[in-house]
Length: 204
Image (tube, rainbow, N blue to C red; front, side):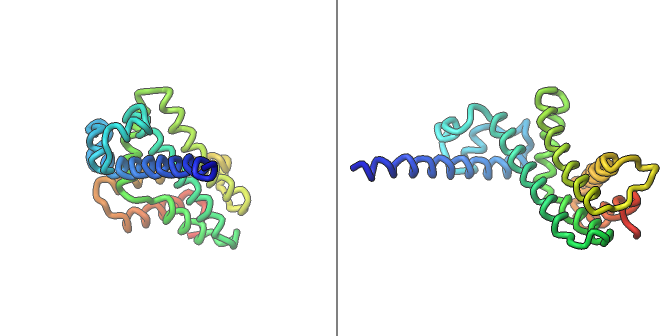
């Protein structure tokens, strides 16, 4: 009896975790398709195959779900960038650094749509903006760490390594706007690599 009782909470916890994960996955697709302001709780529930009761057992509001979704995906991207830059074993191989960074930073169009929704939402709400700024700081820190440890040259006119990392993220932001409009990821990656190279971080 005690064995059954001790196992029950684990099953419940696992089921709750699965429900939460399915709701987040479904929300990602729905937000990317319709946009944050156009989505309703019923849309997420229908996509996930759950009732409103299941939704409210996990989240207090659609906004809470949206924020968690953004946090989850943004953190994953920072981790991917860190791992990709670590994979460039030869610190002196500047071209490899540029190629690895540009191919990793450009993500799928659905994520860019969700991220843009979060940006416009945060721009009108200072307390939300802090969340977005925190993730951007993590992304810059990952790039800055590699620049610093690899000894990659930063031209004097660029300023500090921190400024160079900001410039890389700014180049990424600019290219993703074009990607959202034309959907040409191959061209966007090429443009991003070219922009990073123009910053003086590569011998191209």
